Length: 413
Image (cartoon, rainbow, N blue to C red; front, side, top):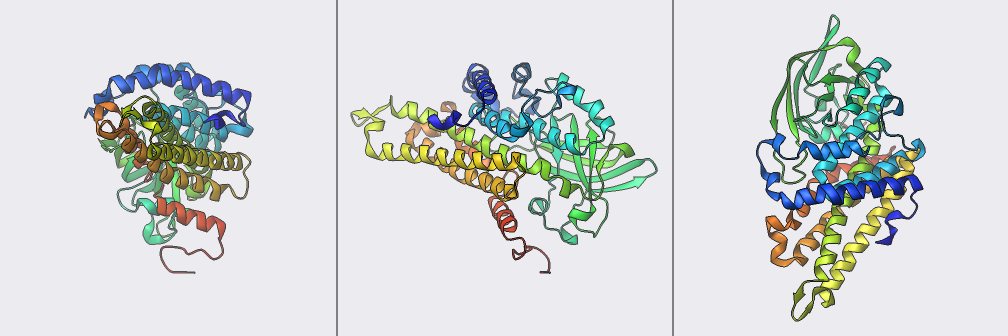
């Protein structure tokens, strides 16, 4: 797979090698030697703090934080492409760890663009200094998760979480579910309806909420089938009062979130590619060393054909990712369609790659302690993250044909 470094800047190559060494020296050994930890039902005991401390040490936690506040400097003209390179390498070690860290990047991009200066000055240094500081983006609710991603901009699809201005406080009531880092984040971006009946793009506001805010209740950790080293959470807001100056965007928060969503799609696809690369690398090693029928597996034509198919799918995902990430960096008109295409294509193709990997490992492929079935579980989660595959298809069509595509909910205009 010699195309991995083609087209990368020297800075990106150096960062990739640093991250790859971190994964090979710290992440992969931990995951392989402690495979049972994935199934510990006390979420805080799954991933040791030492892994986050090492990620902090090499500077990959703080890629999107402005350098003036202690962030890691990267070329702004290639920021999304750099995110893609690093998130792939992280997920090659573990997709859950990648999930933990990339939420910091994505939310930091959002805060950099919409947070008032006083909030940036208060929070970015804290994030940059604390290796265990995690961020969460609270959009999805127990009902109508896909409504948020298209979005279905009709009154009946608006969020059930509500925010009311009472004096100098915004008082928020509601519930969020399926929130990445939701169980253990220290700072949350929370979306809530502020103009009922106006439609999501005209009546939804966003707020910056510290974890220790009275009324914020971490209800539980959602136990997922894959990506289990990121603690997905369900959160309840009970008369939670947020200072007026912690409002990020009033009423039009979803229209301003594209700055978060587009890099997010690239990062999702890149994490997915990292899982696929782990499956391919381990399978390639296995079939060149394991003997079946009197010869090593790769000499069997059926095995060779599957391995070729895996490599082809991964190369195609990488090619699409590079085009899409370049479009997002350049703010090209086709960026919206391309980033959703990359996310969709990666989620479907990498799942097939991981299925091949599991089957080529035979009985070992379904053994928990062998670690291949974990990659299939991890890849399956990507079919549902940041919007389902069907919602991604809807978004692609709406981006390509905005004047004629269906509204998919409510009355046609």
